[in-house]
Image 1 (tube, helix red, strand yellow):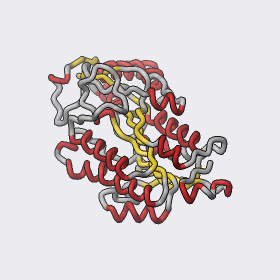
Image 2 (cartoon, rainbow, N blue to C red):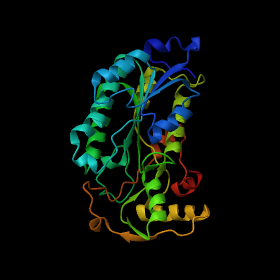
Image 3 (tube, rainbow, N blue to C red):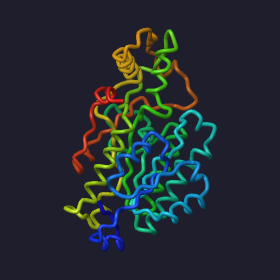
Image 4 (cartoon, helix red, strand yellow):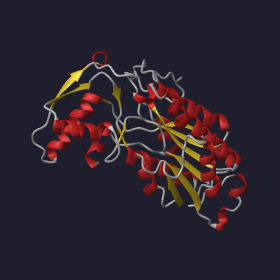
Length: 310
C-alpha cells in the first residue's frame, strides 16, 4: 500500500512503499503491530535499547535516520500506581515523547498513530464515554496520557489517537497474565467488583489499526491531505461489552478450567473503597466506539468472546 501526504502524495503512483516506524516493539500493542502492519509498507520497529524516549535527540535521530511516512507510537509508561511517585518520568514518556514525534510528523508530512487510554476520564458518568466528553484524569498516569493527546493535537500533524482500555495479551505484563498466575498459585484472591470497563485484546487493537491504515491508503480511495486532516483526531477503540475486573477474572478462571487446570483459587469480590492502591481508578470507564464504527466500519468483538483466542 502507498500512503503519502502533501509533497510525498504526488509520488503515490510510483508505488514506493510506506515507511512505518514503530516505537515500543516489545510492548503488547507494539509487538502485534509489527505483524499486522507488515503488509502496508516497510517496517522498522524499535524499543528502549535503540531509542531513549526520555532523550529528544535520541527520538529525532531515529526519525531523521529512517524518515517514516507513518509513525506508530505504541510506547508508553503504563505502571499506573508507580507513576504516582515517578511523575516526571511518566510525563517524559507519555507526554513529551509523543509531542516530539508529532512535531516531527507535522514538519515532515508524516501520519502519526498513537494509543491513549480510558483513564483520561474520571469515571463519574453512568454511560459510555464519547470522544467529545471532557477528560478529567484521577491519577498521574491518566494526566500524562492526556497531556500526550493534547501535544499531538496541538502539533497540527495528521494523526489518529486510539483510546483503548484494560489492554491484555499473552505476553508482557497485564491483568490477564497476572490473574492466570495468581489463580494457580493462591487459595483465594480478592478482585475489585465495582470498576466497569472493557478488557481489550492487544491483537484486536493492532488489527483495527491496520484496517484504518488500509482504508486511508487504498488506491481506490486515495484520500487527499484535506480529507485526512478532517479524519484526524481521537477514536475510541475497545472491545464491545462491559464487565468488571471481578467478572473478567471469573472468565479467566473458566478459560483455565477448559485448559485442564484443576485446582484454582476462589475469587472474592471487593469494593474499590476496600482495596486501596496508590493511584485512584475511574469506577466507570466504558468507551463508546460509535465514531470508528461509522467512519471505518470497525467493531471489535465482545471481550468475553475474544478472551478465548488468547
